[in-house]
Length: 491
Image (tube, rainbow, N blue to C red; front, side, top):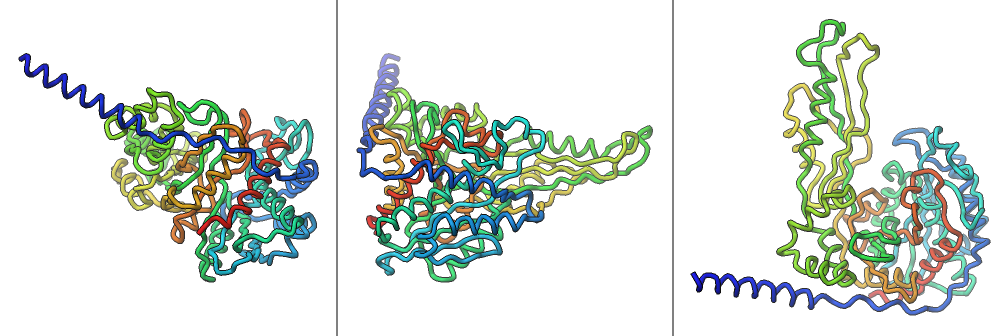
């Protein structure tokens, strides 16, 4: 018995030593970024231009819905007036009817080009919310140190900050080391099928193999990641797939005083309840594991010990993440019933009831596996399951965080916060971006919104009082200026 206890003690001690050694082997945090060369930005003028951009109500209402083409064409004309040097130096093409593709030739045409992405369209503002806005959503007001209105965060700020940066570089007589393509879509908010997808196909058909693709997606914010104190930045290296399924229940209609054994509404309700009670399985593999490992250098020792030993601690970490909606969404394909339709009168049994359930698909699964599982879990012959006509995609491939492109991007992000030991972490984008269309063509596709988000700003995206601090818009312009200047370092 004594020998058994000794063996157990030795095993525990050996395990403890392994855990500590692995923890001590975690790389040191990146050094704080030094204050790089100052980027001169006329923030007042830039803010006024962003405000003017907001005044064009370039709204995407729904896939296939009518588009206010006059608003988009007015926005195109505004860009031409506001950025004359860009429009002299770069070739502009209108793609898919309303999207814009710019080509700015680089000094060395033999180098792989770079693609910078953004989108011009914005989501609508629900009528009941109008009274809650401090300034009207399409006023573009510049007040109290902010630019107010739809698009100041998502995503006219990207379009304008890229153009502001290039206009400034051209004023200095600077030519990029390599060609830069700018793709500004007009329908990102409804899937990007007629904007970004067509522009990607156009560039691919011309033989473009980008050294870097950058779109919106990640961001920099305070207390962003549990276990990492202070500000941190997340760069999207992949995004979830998107699928909406329509569940359709068919039953006998008739008078509500004589219901059949199974009604359409009842069958549909049970199907939805069954799906919610049986969520997709969770896993920390893929981008989420990479994010956790990247957090380790910036975490306290106890947290670092856990993150450095995921081979042992993964089940515990998975349970902790799954305890919050954000953490759970990183781990599995999500199930979200979003629309219901049934009945025409309170005393008439509807012969049909339908629901739309939206799924954000984690890497490792596909549209086909999701549909197969949904049918299997519901297991009801009264329920038909079919895709809706909304845009749907599989999860994007995972981009290479070991590439020079990611290193350049991470260093440029750190330069947004000189003097700070800023954690820059890869992560899985849970929403959708136009960058997904580059997935089959490049492993250097990244996502980052180059503005520091303040308290409450995440809720303002697609919400009430969307706004951007004038000084933070200047930071975004500086980000793109530094990024473009650094493109010569890529192989």
